[in-house]
Amino acid sequence: MEKPIYKHLHQITIAGHPMSSESKPTRTWESLLRETKTRAEAGNTVCEAIRKQIADLLAIGVDDVDVGKPVHSYGVDSLVAVELRNWFARSIGADVAVLQLLGTSTIRNLARDVAGKSKFVCVLE
Image (cartoon, rainbow, N blue to C red; front, side, top):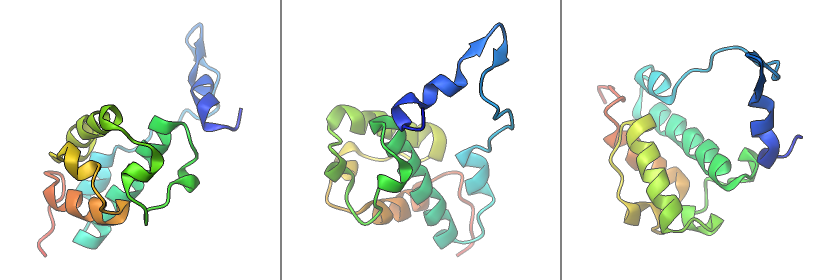
Protein backbone atom coordinates (compact mmCIF):
# COMPACT_ATOMS: atom_id res chain seq x y z
CA MET A 1 0.00 0.00 0.00
CA GLU A 2 3.01 2.32 0.29
CA LYS A 3 3.79 2.14 -3.43
CA PRO A 4 2.60 5.12 -5.49
CA ILE A 5 0.60 2.90 -7.82
CA TYR A 6 -1.74 1.97 -4.94
CA LYS A 7 -2.08 5.42 -3.35
CA HIS A 8 -5.48 5.99 -4.95
CA LEU A 9 -6.86 3.21 -2.78
CA HIS A 10 -6.35 5.42 0.28
CA GLN A 11 -8.87 7.85 -1.15
CA ILE A 12 -11.70 5.39 -1.70
CA THR A 13 -14.83 6.18 0.31
CA ILE A 14 -17.37 3.77 1.72
CA ALA A 15 -20.85 5.17 2.41
CA GLY A 16 -19.48 8.71 2.42
CA HIS A 17 -16.72 8.02 4.95
CA PRO A 18 -13.21 8.28 3.60
CA MET A 19 -10.96 5.35 4.39
CA SER A 20 -7.95 7.67 4.50
CA SER A 21 -7.08 9.31 7.79
CA GLU A 22 -5.96 12.41 5.87
CA SER A 23 -8.95 14.75 5.93
CA LYS A 24 -7.07 18.04 5.99
CA PRO A 25 -7.56 20.29 2.97
CA THR A 26 -4.58 20.67 0.69
CA ARG A 27 -3.42 23.96 -0.76
CA THR A 28 -3.45 24.41 -4.50
CA TRP A 29 -0.38 25.22 -6.57
CA GLU A 30 -2.14 28.44 -7.57
CA SER A 31 -2.37 29.66 -3.98
CA LEU A 32 1.25 28.70 -3.30
CA LEU A 33 2.43 30.56 -6.41
CA ARG A 34 0.41 33.66 -5.55
CA GLU A 35 2.20 33.80 -2.18
CA THR A 36 5.73 33.65 -3.60
CA LYS A 37 7.87 36.74 -3.07
CA THR A 38 10.67 36.15 -5.60
CA ARG A 39 11.11 34.50 -8.98
CA ALA A 40 13.50 31.98 -7.43
CA GLU A 41 10.87 30.99 -4.87
CA ALA A 42 8.27 30.67 -7.63
CA GLY A 43 10.68 28.52 -9.64
CA ASN A 44 11.22 26.23 -6.66
CA THR A 45 7.47 25.91 -6.14
CA VAL A 46 6.91 25.04 -9.80
CA CYS A 47 9.82 22.58 -9.64
CA GLU A 48 8.16 20.73 -6.74
CA ALA A 49 4.83 20.81 -8.58
CA ILE A 50 6.42 19.26 -11.68
CA ARG A 51 8.12 16.57 -9.59
CA LYS A 52 4.83 15.63 -7.96
CA GLN A 53 2.89 15.66 -11.23
CA ILE A 54 5.45 13.49 -13.04
CA ALA A 55 5.48 11.08 -10.12
CA ASP A 56 1.68 10.91 -10.15
CA LEU A 57 1.44 10.42 -13.91
CA LEU A 58 4.11 7.73 -14.02
CA ALA A 59 3.22 6.05 -10.70
CA ILE A 60 6.70 6.51 -9.24
CA GLY A 61 7.88 8.08 -6.01
CA VAL A 62 8.46 11.83 -5.88
CA ASP A 63 11.97 11.17 -4.57
CA ASP A 64 12.70 9.21 -7.75
CA VAL A 65 12.23 12.32 -9.91
CA ASP A 66 15.58 14.10 -10.29
CA VAL A 67 15.22 17.78 -11.22
CA GLY A 68 18.62 17.69 -12.89
CA LYS A 69 17.29 15.45 -15.67
CA PRO A 70 14.99 16.35 -18.56
CA VAL A 71 11.36 15.24 -18.55
CA HIS A 72 11.87 12.83 -21.47
CA SER A 73 14.41 10.83 -19.43
CA TYR A 74 11.46 9.39 -17.46
CA GLY A 75 9.89 7.93 -20.58
CA VAL A 76 7.42 10.77 -21.07
CA ASP A 77 6.03 10.54 -24.59
CA SER A 78 3.90 12.99 -26.55
CA LEU A 79 0.62 11.80 -24.99
CA VAL A 80 1.90 12.29 -21.45
CA ALA A 81 3.43 15.61 -22.52
CA VAL A 82 0.00 16.79 -23.69
CA GLU A 83 -1.43 15.80 -20.31
CA LEU A 84 1.38 17.75 -18.61
CA ARG A 85 0.70 20.73 -20.88
CA ASN A 86 -2.98 20.74 -19.88
CA TRP A 87 -2.01 20.42 -16.22
CA PHE A 88 0.36 23.41 -16.54
CA ALA A 89 -2.47 25.52 -17.97
CA ARG A 90 -4.91 24.46 -15.26
CA SER A 91 -2.77 24.29 -12.12
CA ILE A 92 0.21 26.56 -12.80
CA GLY A 93 -1.45 29.11 -15.08
CA ALA A 94 1.15 28.85 -17.83
CA ASP A 95 0.99 27.95 -21.51
CA VAL A 96 3.83 25.52 -22.19
CA ALA A 97 4.60 24.00 -25.59
CA VAL A 98 4.79 20.21 -25.85
CA LEU A 99 8.15 20.55 -27.61
CA GLN A 100 9.48 22.50 -24.62
CA LEU A 101 8.39 19.66 -22.32
CA LEU A 102 10.06 17.04 -24.48
CA GLY A 103 13.22 19.09 -25.04
CA THR A 104 16.61 18.66 -23.41
CA SER A 105 16.08 21.27 -20.70
CA THR A 106 16.27 19.95 -17.15
CA ILE A 107 13.19 19.96 -14.93
CA ARG A 108 14.80 22.72 -12.84
CA ASN A 109 15.29 24.95 -15.92
CA LEU A 110 11.83 24.11 -17.21
CA ALA A 111 10.35 25.11 -13.84
CA ARG A 112 12.17 28.45 -13.92
CA ASP A 113 10.84 29.15 -17.43
CA VAL A 114 7.30 28.10 -16.53
CA ALA A 115 7.32 30.22 -13.36
CA GLY A 116 8.16 33.22 -15.54
CA LYS A 117 5.13 32.49 -17.73
CA SER A 118 2.67 31.75 -14.92
CA LYS A 119 -0.21 34.19 -14.54
CA PHE A 120 -0.32 33.28 -10.83
CA VAL A 121 3.17 34.62 -10.10
CA CYS A 122 3.15 38.34 -9.26
CA VAL A 123 6.65 39.35 -8.20
CA LEU A 124 8.26 42.73 -8.81
CA GLU A 125 11.77 41.53 -9.69
